[in-house]
Structures are given as structure tokens and as C-alpha cells.
Length: 363
Image (tube, rainbow, N blue to C red; front, side):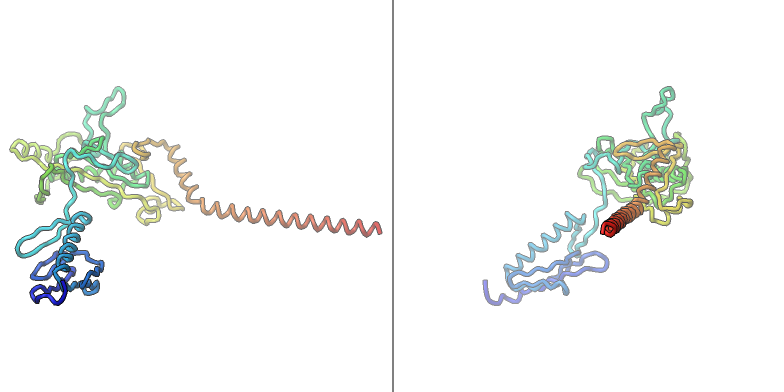
């Protein structure tokens, strides 16, 4: 098709970002978030600076339509946006994170991931029927042990509460009051570490668990003022509140609780404050609330004795001093080589002098 098209098919499509991250659609005007690339087609020019496209033929109208469809599809798939439309406006919103019940996660238990099917954070939360006093064994261990291992390994990690050992998502049903109880229990356990773990070194997220096909739930903020009882395996008032809701047919939402420990940065002043007597920036060693020291090794926990801790610190100091030792070794090898050359030159001079003296005496 050639020549000038009728005026009613001439369009100007403007692409720009709005201040509130929402896209307002009006006649012949479209707003697409994140459009940063330029496109040049037949009789169509995209001006990146002005974010404008000028369309001059039917073919380009189809091309621009396909381009907009591709952009919206790409944003939905990669950036996690969902489009909500009505007759007046179109907006882009970020989809909140959630898990699907009975799905299997694409991660396994390793150096930085641990799955837990219970929410006993502290050693005091573990019920006595999970402890075999005769054989000194447990069928359930506190989450604080794994957090201690993540802290001492220095790499950080995440405990997924509500995920079985095989990676199957089950979730734990907790009310908002029980969420507060879990957070308080976690804070109390971290404060019982030696040294106490600062709050910036760990975080907690409650991620909803949905059934296939469910919509993301609306979160309501309840008034939460009553104190909780921690360091006990007995039921708290929040547990009785949850039981009361069960009896009235109100089933709490299921969540996967992600308790994360950040990787340690020895050069961070906040981390250095944990070891004020250390002359070099080394990672602090944390003792768990049960009096033991744990390190994360691959997907297991290893209990360290004080001798093992000494060896670990000695190795860490050795690695810290390694660049200086290598530099000193290079200087020593250079000095040794130069000294050897000087000795060889001196010996050669002495040999030459002896040869000259011997020749003079012969004459």
C-alpha cells in the first residue's frame, strides 16, 4: 500500500512512564512501563528520547500492535506484573510472592537452604515427647541450631518453615497472633546466643501458601497487644485463639516462613563490633542457645568443640595473612636469588684474583 492514508488512520502513539507507576490509557495514547529500546520499521520511527512512535500506514498499525502485545507479555512473564483493566484505565501491579500447596521446590537442602516441617524455633519450644532421654536423641530439633550454623559458616542461608525434607510445600497454619509469637520466639532465641545476634543479621517473611487456582488473599491487620509466653512448649494464648477459630469454622491461612541469615561481611563495622578485641577483621563465632557451636557443612550441621573453633580461627587468620605471607615469600626469594648471584660473582672475582697471582708468580 502506498501514498497517503486517510487522516483518520494517522495516529501518534506516545510511550512514557508515569510518576505513580500506573499506566493511564486514553484515546490514541498508550503508556508502557520500562520501554527503553528503539525500533525502526517501514515508515515508523521510535524516538527513544521523546518516547514517541509515528504510524503512517495500515501495516505499521499491525506492527505496533504486535510490538505492544510483546512488551506487555514480556513484562508479565519476566518482571512479575499483572494487568488489571476496565473501561477507564489499565494499571500494572507487581504480583506478590506465594507458594502452591503440594508443589515441589526446585531447590534442595544444601549449604544455604534448610527445610523444616515445624515451627519450634527455640530449644524450649520442642515438646518433651520429641526427646528420647534414655538415648539422648531427638525426633525434632530446634530451628535455632540451623540459624547458628548459617551464622558461623559466614555464607548466610534460609530456613523454610512449612516445607518437608523432600521439598514438598505444606505450609504451617498460623494466625497473625501466632506470627507475632513466632517472631518474638525468634528474637528471644537470637538474644540468647553468645554473643547476641543483632537484628540486622536476620529477617523473617511469611509467604502465603495457596491451593491451585486460588487468588492472593487480602491481608487484614488485627490489633495485637497482649503479651506472648515464650521458652515453653505449652500452648500460648494465641494457640488457644487459633483453636477457637478452628472450632468456629475459621481456618487460618497457611504460610511458608522464610527465616534468612545474611552473609557476613568482616569489613562491616557492625560485624567488627561483635569482636572488639580482634586485631584483624574475622568472622564472629556464635554459640547457640543450647550451649553448642554449630557450623553448616553442605546440607548438614556439624557440632564444633572449642579445639575445632581454635583450628577454624587459626585457619581464618592464616588465610587473612596469606597475601602478606606470599609477598614476604616473594621478597625472600628475590633476596635469596640476589644473594646467590652476589656470592657467585664474589667467588668468581676471588678465583680470577688467584689465577692472576698464580700467573705473576710463575713469571
